[in-house]
Structure formats: structure tokens, C-alpha cells
Amino acid sequence: MLSGVLTAIVTPFLNGRLDEKSLTELISFQLEKGVHGIVPCGTTGESPTLSFEEYKRVVEITVEAVNKKVPVVAGAGANSTARAVELTQAAKSLGVDATLQVAPYYNKPTQEGLFQHFKAVTEVGLPVVLYNVPGRTGIDIHPTTVARLAEIPEIIAIKEASGSIGRMAEIRKLCGEQLTLLTGDDAQTLPALCMGGKGVISVLSNLLPQEMVTLYEHWQDGNSTGAIDSNEHLFPVMQAMFIESNPVPVKTALAMKGLIASSEVRLPLCSMSVENEKELARAMQQAGIL
Picture 1 (spheres, one colour):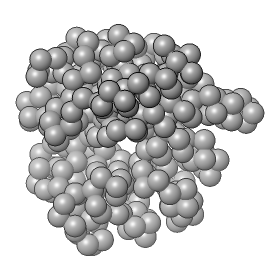
Picture 2 (picture 1 turned 90 degrees about the horizontal axis):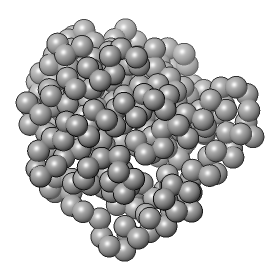
Picture 3 (picture 1 turned 120 degrees about the vertical axis):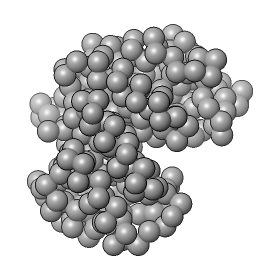
Picture 4 (picture 1 turned 90 degrees about the vertical axis):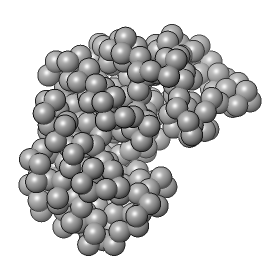
């Protein structure tokens, strides 16, 4: 169901409010450039700072703008199982194709607690993409737990963002084709594809959707040299997207390019430092983006 480049879309803000115009235009830009899916309300979409009404509006706008051209995978995770179920029910009512479910942060559940949490979410009846990002959540979904969860029909994929190539290989070995493996790290797109992964939930594709699609398509076409060349060209910009906490750099870059009206983020995130913004601009210039 899911493969290729899925954009973890930013949530644009303007003067403290959701910038619906920028969001709609950015989604249209993604579709024009050939991305294979849109993922609203994830980490890149600043989901922890969205009110429930804002959450529903972002998902609604995304579903309407995409208009069934590609899958919409709405972030609907929380560290309260009841809240994750509530968000998933809302996403289902708005017509998404699947939900992205992050490991519950802060609570530090056991592996059994993680299993029961995700199992409870599947009872809503939507396909689920697990999201493992221990650097943000403080909890790691172990590969053996992933394999247990893969037995549940509604659990169709994992966004693996631990930063470990070995971890992706282990999940692939345990789950095979039963679970779609997606990387959550742009810089690991090519390695993930090499070991049987199906694609990436991408930050960089907000800014460079066509270029990320080209990398993926080179690999799919058997053009490994083209894929390596694309990766080498994009790698400095991939790194620049994380010189400060995501999505601060990508929103700054999008505003530089005029793809959104403002680089505004919500506290506790804040604007980039002047020095890091200069470094970001240098990386973009070297890649021919500015």
C-alpha cells in the first residue's frame, strides 16, 4: 500500500494561527512533483502544539487537497492510549488512508505496554504505521515487539527512525514482506532501499520533492549509479535539515524559497539562530536551491 517518497508535511503558521493557504499550496506543490504520499500532523507537522480543532482542520485540508491522488497517513499518536484512539477516530472520520502511531513518549512503557497500546489503536479499524523514534520519545520499540505487532492485520508498516541501519536490517529479517519498512531519516533512504525497505517518510521532500522522488525512481529502475549520485547531491541538504530541531530548518528553508508565507514555529520551538540560518543558506546555495 505504501511505498516511495511520503512527505512529512509541515504545518504552516502565520501570526499564531494555522496558515491554511500555505498548507494547501504546499500540498499541491508536492503532488505536482510526484510524491507518493502525504503525512500530516507528525513530528514535522508540530503535532504536540496543535489543538484538537486545529488537528482536525489540518487533516481535513490535507484529505481535500490530496483528493485521493496519493495515500494520506495522518499522525495520530499520543502518550495516552485513550488520546491516540480519539485522534485515530477523528482521522478515520475525515477520510485518511492510514495513521502514523508514534511510540508513547515520557511514560516509558514496557514492551508489553507498547504492544497493548498499539493493539488498542488498531481496534479503530484503520491501517497503522508504527513510528519508532527513540531519540524523541525516550522509548524504543524492540524488533521482537515489531514482529509481534506485524501479526495484527491492521499494522501494515513501520517508520523506523532510530538512526540504526542494523535495526532496519533486523526488522526486515524478522518481518520480511509482512511489514512494509520505511525509513524516517532522509539520509538513510538509499541504505533502507538497499536492504528491502520500500521508501521514506521525508522531511526534505517538503523542500525538494522532485529530487527525492528522482532518487527513489533511480533505485526502482535499477539505476544504482543514478541513485548514488542523487544521494550525494542531496546529502548536505539532508544534513542541514537537522542542524536544529526539526521542523525549524525545513520551515526556514521553505520560507526562504517562498513555498510558505512564514517560517513560524510554536514554542517551545523557536526561530533558528542567525549562525545556523547562514549555514542552512550555504548548504542550499551549494545544492543550487538558492
